[in-house]
View 1 (tube, rainbow, N blue to C red):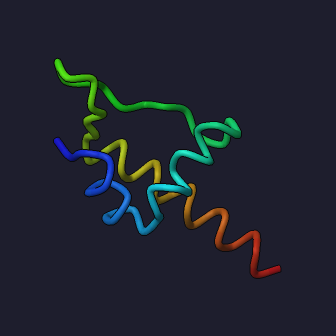
View 2 (cartoon, one colour; view 1 turned 135 degrees about the vertical axis):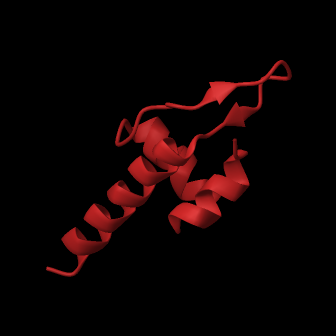
Length: 62
Protein backbone atom coordinates (compact mmCIF):
# COMPACT_ATOMS: atom_id res chain seq x y z
CA UNK A 1 0.00 0.00 0.00
CA UNK A 2 1.01 3.61 -0.60
CA UNK A 3 0.22 6.72 1.41
CA UNK A 4 -1.17 9.87 -0.20
CA UNK A 5 2.06 11.67 -1.04
CA UNK A 6 3.67 8.52 -2.46
CA UNK A 7 0.59 7.74 -4.55
CA UNK A 8 0.43 11.28 -5.91
CA UNK A 9 4.10 11.24 -6.88
CA UNK A 10 3.66 7.94 -8.73
CA UNK A 11 0.51 9.22 -10.46
CA UNK A 12 2.25 12.45 -11.45
CA UNK A 13 -0.02 14.88 -9.61
CA UNK A 14 0.42 17.10 -6.58
CA UNK A 15 -1.23 16.43 -3.24
CA UNK A 16 -3.15 19.70 -3.66
CA UNK A 17 -4.48 18.56 -7.04
CA UNK A 18 -5.55 15.23 -5.56
CA UNK A 19 -7.54 16.88 -2.77
CA UNK A 20 -9.00 19.48 -5.17
CA UNK A 21 -10.19 16.72 -7.50
CA UNK A 22 -11.88 14.94 -4.58
CA UNK A 23 -13.53 18.19 -3.47
CA UNK A 24 -14.74 18.94 -7.01
CA UNK A 25 -16.01 15.38 -7.51
CA UNK A 26 -13.60 14.71 -10.38
CA UNK A 27 -12.40 11.56 -8.63
CA UNK A 28 -13.84 9.69 -5.70
CA UNK A 29 -11.94 9.17 -2.48
CA UNK A 30 -11.24 5.53 -3.32
CA UNK A 31 -8.52 4.90 -0.76
CA UNK A 32 -8.99 2.65 2.20
CA UNK A 33 -7.80 3.92 5.56
CA UNK A 34 -5.57 2.51 8.24
CA UNK A 35 -6.36 2.56 11.96
CA UNK A 36 -5.01 6.13 12.20
CA UNK A 37 -7.33 7.31 9.43
CA UNK A 38 -4.54 7.77 6.88
CA UNK A 39 -5.40 6.97 3.28
CA UNK A 40 -3.85 3.85 1.78
CA UNK A 41 -3.74 3.36 -1.98
CA UNK A 42 -3.32 0.22 -4.04
CA UNK A 43 -1.56 0.17 -7.39
CA UNK A 44 -5.02 0.01 -8.99
CA UNK A 45 -6.06 3.22 -7.17
CA UNK A 46 -2.89 4.92 -8.39
CA UNK A 47 -3.54 3.79 -11.95
CA UNK A 48 -7.00 5.42 -11.79
CA UNK A 49 -5.39 8.65 -10.58
CA UNK A 50 -2.82 8.47 -13.37
CA UNK A 51 -5.54 7.90 -15.98
CA UNK A 52 -7.42 10.97 -14.76
CA UNK A 53 -4.22 13.03 -14.81
CA UNK A 54 -3.60 11.94 -18.41
CA UNK A 55 -7.19 12.77 -19.38
CA UNK A 56 -6.96 16.24 -17.82
CA UNK A 57 -3.58 16.84 -19.48
CA UNK A 58 -4.97 15.89 -22.90
CA UNK A 59 -8.02 18.14 -22.40
CA UNK A 60 -5.82 21.14 -21.64
CA UNK A 61 -3.75 20.64 -24.80
CA UNK A 62 -6.71 21.33 -27.10
